Length: 421
Image (cartoon, rainbow, N blue to C red):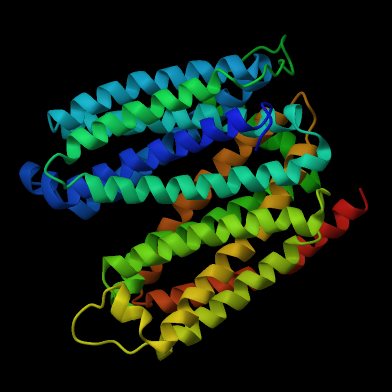
C-alpha cells in the first residue's frame, strides 16, 4: 500500500467502484421514491432493467477490452478510461440537476461500458507490477478495497439523494470522485503491451467465443474462472435479497438490511487480507476448499439462527434487532460467510493471473468478466424462479449452501491439480 507500483492502481480502482455504486444506488433510490411515479412507470420493473443494463456492457465489450489491454500500454489506456469517466460524470451531474430519467439510464449504460473496459486492465497489470509472492496480497487488498468501495458508494448514494440538496451533493460527488480517480491513474507506472502486433477482432460475439475456447484447455485457469464466477453468483443472491430477508424473515427494517451489507463487506475484506497471512504470499489453491466448506457452514448457521429471532408486529430497527440474542448469531453467520468467501476467491484470482501467459492475460480476465456477468444475471433468474415457486428467502439461502457444498470436490481437484503443476 506504500509503493507506487500498487497504491495508485488501488486508488484508481477504489474510486471507480465507489463512483459506480454512488451513481447506481442514487438512481435506484430516486426512481423508487420519486421518478417512477412522475413518469408513470413500474419501479420494480425499471430497477430490474437498470441492473441488467449496467451488466450488459460486460457481455458486449469485455472481449474487445481484453484485446485492447493486451495490444496497448496499460497505464495509458487506464488514463483514457478515467478521463472518459469524468466526461460521463459531468453529463450525469447535468442529468441529475434537470431530473432527466432517460438521460440517467443511458449514462448508467455508458458507465457500465467504462467499467467493462477497465476490468481486464486492472487485473492484468497487477502481475506486471507485483512480484509473484506479492500477488495474493495485492489481489486481497484490491478485493477488500472493492467491497468497501461498493459498500460506501451504495450507502452514500442512498443517504444523500433524498436530502433537499441531495442531487447537488451527488452531482458534485460523482464528478469529484471521477477526478480523483483520474489523478490517481496519472501515477500508475507504465506496463508495456503484451502483444503489440495483435489485430483487434471488433466482432464481440466471435472474439468472445475465441477467448473462451482459448481458456478452456488451461484447466487451472478455467476452473479458477468458474470458481470466481460462482462466488459472484452466490454473493449476488445474498446481496440482492438482504432487504427481503431483513423484512420477511427477521422482521427488520432498512437499517437492519444496511447492517448486513456492512457486515458482508467487512467480512470479505477480512477474509481477503487474512488469506495472504495464511498463505504467506504463496500462490496456492489449498485454502479454496476450506473457504467453500466455511461458506456452507455459515449458511447452515444462518438458517438456524434466523429461526431464533422473534418477529414483532412492527419492523425493528438496528437497536431493537441487536437486543435479540439470536441476532448476534445471524450477524456472526454473515461475517463468517463473507470472510470464507474472501478466503475462497482471492487465491483463484492469483492463480488465474499467474497461470495465464503474458500474451493472453488481459483476454483471460475479459473471459472472467463475461462469466462473472453471466453468473450475476443467472443469480437474478434463479431467485426469480425460486420465488415463483413460493420458496422463502431463507430456504433459497439453504439451497445455495447445499449446492456450494456439492461443488467442493471440484475445487479440491483444483488444489490438487495446482499443487502438481
